[in-house]
Length: 383
Image (cartoon, rainbow, N blue to C red; front, side, top):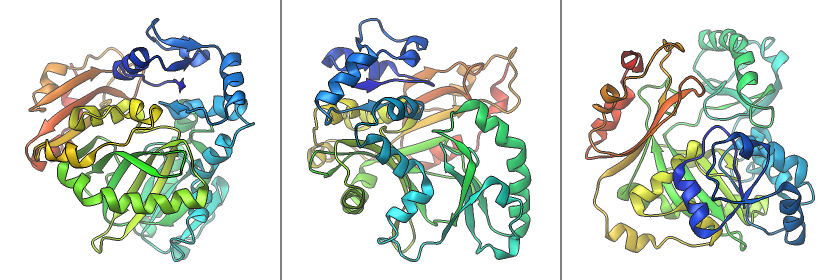
């Protein structure tokens, strides 16, 4: 069963649900979204009864906003507790402390942040909400000056966080200070089957333009990335599944790999794959429909898939709303798309409602094409 919620539901997801007859929860959020009438809607009462009859019913949400509904209505299952375990970054660190016994982290209340003496902090560290989403409230800090700047900036942004997401998605009352995890960043769409085996559906690499960059503008995948990390990430996820007793559970896991090939998870995002339906990239790059694979408990034949693709880079761009954009402005999509050499699909998003104006799936021959997009000033696409 799909539990769909704001901010965005792709046509690809909807068409998958229609084609295969998957149930879609007809909750308040579904009524507010512009969803296809052909979807197989199921009312809330019937959905709850269905799950009570079979607590192993497979559930997928496109958005973390749906966590509120799950928490309130499915407390007779283990799902809300599993969500809390991963949404709370401090709890997650404690969960994997046996795997990473020397990893530094500290949970603090918002009020405590302003009283901490910068000299007490073992830099470099990351400061972020214990319950957070994307890059909201995330600060990478290398010294006392940067700590003071982060605290000052945090004060001015707290209300913005509260106005965009509910507490179940971004909770600004508690924060975590943790060791900066060095290395290349990756994100993985994976589900844990009924035997707790992790089934990886896609691996993205997350490039940054500098050490201060925490944006989610571009991720890419490739044959080489899958070949290099598929087995290594699967081995780590088995350990996490064992610690948390994960079954029939979709997740989007972020991690880093340092120069010594040490793998350290950053966070686990429960009940979903990549946000904004950007997990659809798996279809453009590898022919994998992540929703169908999860609901049908299918395992990608990675050997065959990799034998039949070239060495291209497949990527998506989450084009954030330009900082100078105002409601009477217009985005020049034609000019913007001149920077995408091989677009595969363009999804226009209303920047008057959302913090992005487009999601692009594309193909590149070299990594330089991707870094050129990272360097773009999106303000120049405002009419």
